[in-house]
Amino acid sequence: MDPHLRGDDGGGGFRRRWIPASAGMANTHTALHYITLPPLRRQGSSVSIIYLCISMKSGFVYILASCPFGTLYIGVTSNLPKRIWEHKEGVVKGFTKKYGIRHLVYYEIHSTITGALQRERQLKRWKRTWKINLIMNMNPQWKDLYEEL
Image 1 (tube, rainbow, N blue to C red):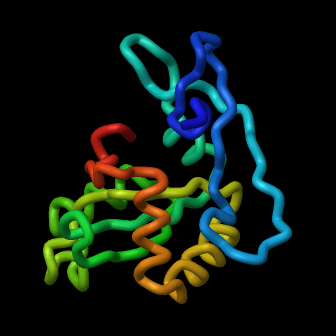
Image 2 (image 1 turned 120 degrees about the horizontal axis):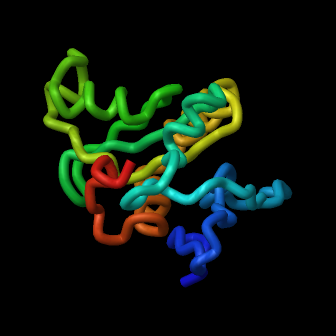
Image 3 (image 1 turned 90 degrees about the vertical axis):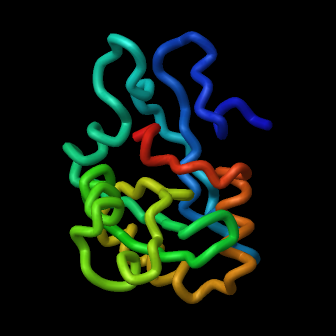
């Protein structure tokens, strides 16, 4: 697997991260882009990628699951850690609370909230198998990514 997709920085501090804006799409002519971002939060490190993106007013598209291959929920937000915490704590009444959907299994970072909203609408129109394949490419163990934010 490409170390850039896993998030390894090769010891250099800054790294190139793959932003899967067109991941899993067939017949697309959109090029995939790499952008340079600071390293994720580690012991004694500076700013995490999530908090950097929040301060830049970017958007996030995320997928929650009740369990591996279970019920899926697709959402969009400008503050991913806060929004996932709300889902986990049951603060948000609705679909996720009713069906116990609390595990963050996939997310994408977009430069604007408008781009994130467009991607959310696109993913919601996808077939379930396409969504599962998208999750499997980023998170094959279906582990909860919330602890890594």
